[in-house]
Length: 90
Image (cartoon, rainbow, N blue to C red):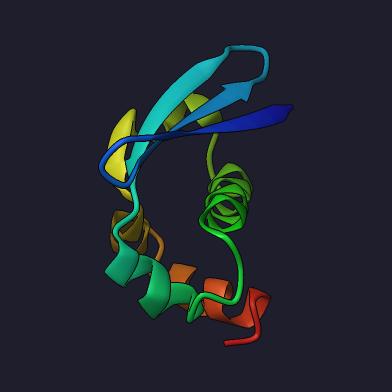
């Protein structure tokens, strides 16, 4: 499985997952959410990569929303924010 991340205008990113079934996801990551989650200790791209690996450990890529704000992951997986903070030592 391979992830590719492409920055788009207005804090949006396209994340493509190449697996048995390839999927594309459009993710919004505001500067505020980025700072709140990581204190800028990692890049936005690294955060997105971590976040998708986190999701893929819990569900198939075909179950991941096609368009969402990154922070919405916490609504489905309450442990997400703590996992991010532990991962980047924040």
